[in-house]
Length: 77
Image (cartoon, rainbow, N blue to C red; front, side):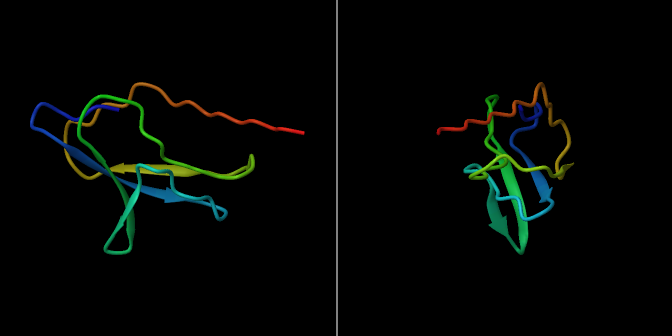
């Protein structure tokens, strides 16, 4: 993700089914948000196991650009 030309952009994240927010997510006024300050990959979800669920992203500032989503899973026996 990348912010717009006017500076940092904030997004609100809504997760389903007990999903856990990622390391870039913070809680503000009871909402889970991510501050997009520069172009890079952002960690939005951090679960211990692979789960079925949904994520909703809501741009709270104009100009936010989203380029790709990457989902990673790893099982160690």
